[in-house]
Amino acid sequence: MTADGINGDTQAPALKIFIGGDRSQVGKSTVCLGILGSLLELGYSPSDLAYIKPVTQCEQPQLISKWCAAKGVACRGIGPVVFYAGFTRAFLKGEAGTSEQLLADAKAAVDEISKGKKFVVVDGVGYPAVGSICGISNAHTAAALHTPVLLVGRSGVGDAVDSFNLNATFFKSHGVEVLGGVFNRLASGGFYSLANCQEAVTNYFARVGRQMPYGFVPDAQPMLKGKLEVAAAHTDEALSAAVAVRGGGLVLVVFAQPECPVPEACKVRAGAVCLWLCLCTYIHTG
Image 1 (cartoon, one colour):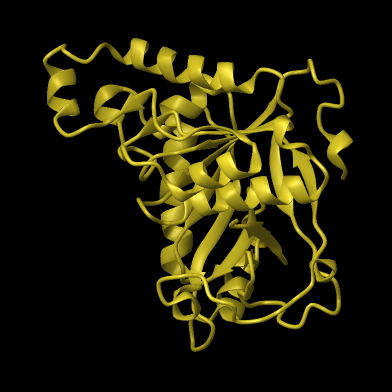
Image 2 (cartoon, one colour):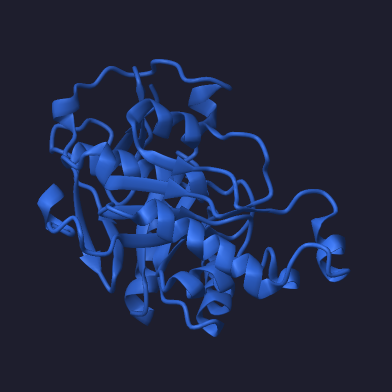
C-alpha cells in the first residue's frame, strides 16, 4: 500500500489507531514511533501524519515529541489532560472538572490535530484502566474517539497472553475493538526466546481466531547499553514496508527483503533502530 492507499481525498476523516499497553513503560510510544516511521517510509508526507497523547501522567517532553519535531510531523505529546500529582484527589473534590469535560477536552484535542491528516496515532497512558477513577481511562478515551486499539504487551507466553486477554476485556467492556497485540522485549535466546514465544503465541491467536499478533519485538537493551550505538551496518534498500487496513484500524504488516541477515532479531544501525513488528520495520532517530 502506498501513501495514496489511505484517504486519498485529504478532506476525508483521518484514520486513527489507539496504542494501549498492559503497563507503563511497556513500549507504547516506541510502537507509535515505529508506525509513524513506517508510514513516512511508505511515502506519506509528514503533513499527512499526526501523533497525540491526549491523556498523560508525564509532564516532560518524550523522545517521540522530539522525533516528530525533527521530521515535521504534527505532535501534541502532553495533554490536554495531565494526571499531575494530586489530580485524583482534586477531581474527587470536584476541583478538576467532570469526567464528561475531561473526555470532551481529550476528544477535542484529537479532532483538532486530525484536521487535514490522513493518519493519526493516539498514544495511551499506563495500563488500560489508568484514569478510570476519573472516568477517563484509556478505554473511555478510545470509545469517545471511536478508535480501535492495538495493545502492546509483555514478553513470554502464558503471562503475555493472559495479560493481553485481561486488558483486551477491559477495552471490549467499553465497546472498543481490539485488533491484536505487539509483544515487546523478548529475549534473543533461551526457553523464552523471541522465536519460541512467537511460535507459541501465534499458535494461540490462530486457535482462538479473534485478534492477531502483529509484532514480536526483541529486547534491544543488551545491545543499546543506555544509548544508540552502531551494532551493524545495513542499507535502506535492505528493508521494505507495507501496511494494510482492517476494521477501521491499522494492521502493521512490515516486510523484510530476503537478504535481511537477521530476520528475528533487533539491529541497531546508524540513525535507525530496527523493530521487528511482524517481520521488520524501523524508525529514524535523527
